[in-house]
Length: 298
Image 1: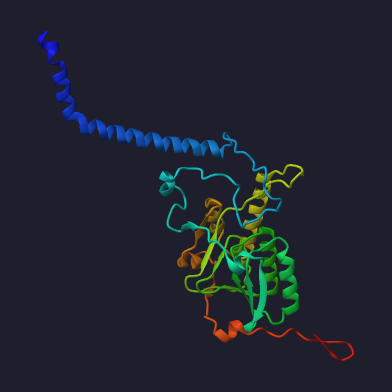
Image 2: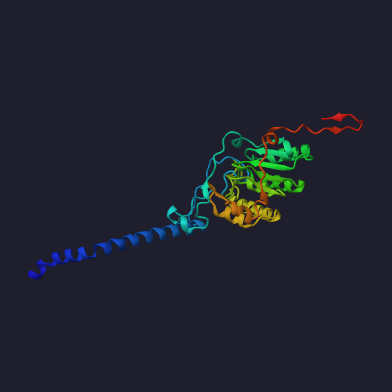
């Protein structure tokens, strides 16, 4: 009986001596379970063991890069972000376009042969760009971009035409060229970026099936367009590490390249020369062609 009466006292004494050790042990076990759970969730998502509902009201559209990704959620909790590829300060929120950037891209030819391309790359805009290049091709020297991106297929078409015409591309100081706009930028024979210009990439996305239309294999479509982008960047002489960063970055984030990376990955080829006020605001008159009868046609 005397021994049993001292058992609670002995337990309290033991607990007071080992309390700190027990707390640390439980904290470690809890953290380990969180990490294991996050990795298991990521593995299940990658292997397709978790099925995500397809958005029933998705607007009919082609593959676009204005909201690029495979529409998958973040594959790991934020506690694991520092351990994942690209989990650093170069990841930033997508810029929210407003004003001219939120509208369909427009083109204006100004001084020094600079074609100002401002706004969203909407489906079909590459045709408008081709018409502009045909109309003013003899004047255009540099395509100056300020865009949040948009249609990938149109961006690829614009970039290849820029290379065919041997135009330069530029992002002015403080402006941005992100998402599919970076593909257009890569088409320049010479590529210039001003101070604090933002050039960034992220994943491509396939949007939902058209209303009342047959289902689309969005994964296959996204993989196809991704392969086309990779081939394109190789053709343009840009490091394919650019596309690695794009594929690692979720559609709702942006991987913004540091100035040193812009050069080391051959995204830019030279530093931009600031334009004067008169050069960037004075429109160039329309080209005038001679008719067969010798008169001038505008």
